Length: 290
Image 1 (spheres, rainbow, N blue to C red):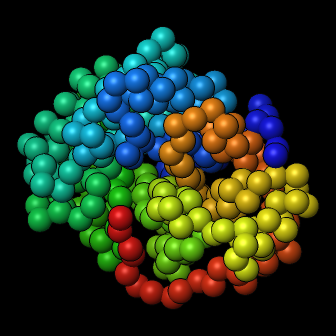
Image 2: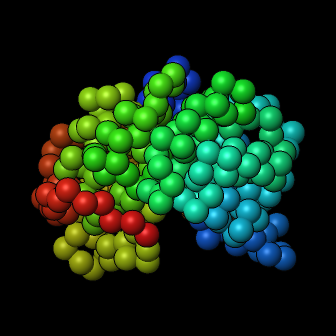
């Protein structure tokens, strides 16, 4: 297996000048009680040491508990080394509700500002209210950038049209080798408009290809050529395009080191063609949501 290096790839995050590691840390379903919570904090801290400084969380995750674990993990870390993202639930995404949700997340995270604040998915509240609140949060210095999650092209157009003073920084979507729908329309749109695309659940939900399957064999063959693992190859594939990032969850040392070591893995054009053949792109206008 490749070992983590100090030269993880970074790129600018949408319209932000900030260079962000292409691989970060997710916190959805991170164990958050008892001894398991302590292990989660230890894992997040190790991830930061390995340059996995882009940490993605949300008020929904563990009803705010994930944000509290992140707060414990980042305590004492220089703020400018961290890139912290959280999200507001759709049912809270009125103008006032969005502001209250952000302020509550900041309290749980024990931070003065978030690097990016997202609308978790499309809401019954008018998008103009949510985006207006996020622009106010930016004006007040409580967030450095604003974004969305699980938005298709039509949703992105509506969000951009609602913004008056600040650009849309990112769209976070389900994206793994078996679910490449984002590449059909959403990724090209994001690239045209300077919006970062962040893939969540990059290993799927318990359905990462088995080495005994044809798809798994394709990843294994490529991995052998690079002294890597199939999961490292998958992460490199998902971050191969301009403007792409991914936030895998990991709660043990081995997985964290494996994820971090994928940060400097560069696939060849023939590697990419082999993966694209093994995992065909479905052309669709709708995005799946977990």
